[in-house]
Length: 310
Image (cartoon, rainbow, N blue to C red; front, side):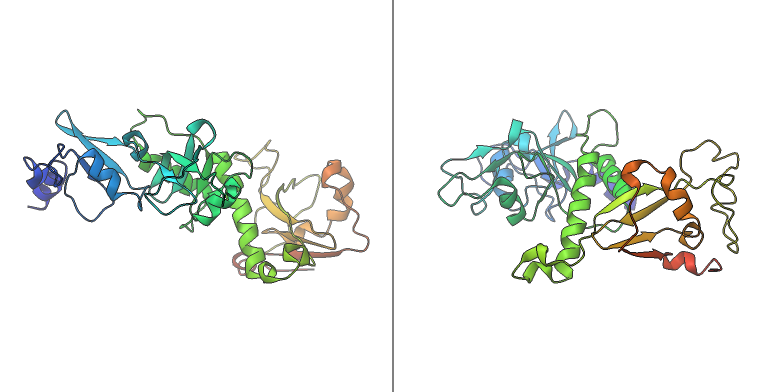
């Protein structure tokens, strides 16, 4: 019985011969994200989704449902005005190739900016619509956030959810999405620390931390030998599975004006000979420790499984 109900959802169900409620067009569209399973015509479907422009729509065609986008059906998102209200002087997003990355998938979107008297910059219009833009100049990508997994897993899960057949190409915006994540995290950190309400804004921050990925080039023979207890990140750096790699781990460093913080799972070992190794690093990774506060941190989970020794 359960299987029959699942199969019933794959078809038109009780709406097999029911016209659209408007009585004008055939009811062939169904939303996957609305609670109602009723079919509607193109016009009614668009009218029902001015407040839900990222919902996923399917069209009954050729004996089964096909995925279609609200953009292809004619829905436009108008920024700077209430939903359903068209601007007198709309401006289409750059190349009419706007993509929104949301928990439902990767959505090609018809998006128009406002050019009325109350016009503000494009990236501000996106932010006011709770869409985080990828850039401040001619943005073509924006994202919403509702996930606690890695950016890679999140994005590629959405790509597979958008189309897992491999037949329809998905807009590749992964690298842009990573930039959005970094900017979003930085702004949230400044906001939570109170700098958003400071009269001087983020310039009031005494320490502005810029995070960058730092490949931990730790090699057993040329750098150090770990004496951590039950921790083989260094001792096994030259094993068969990792021999010849440029890096066997990844750490993060923050580079503010007066304080430098290194966080890595074996920072307790790394800091011992870092200063001897520093001159061998590329020039852009070298720094003068004079007059700076240098801190080394071991992530909490790692500190429970290793012996911290000076």
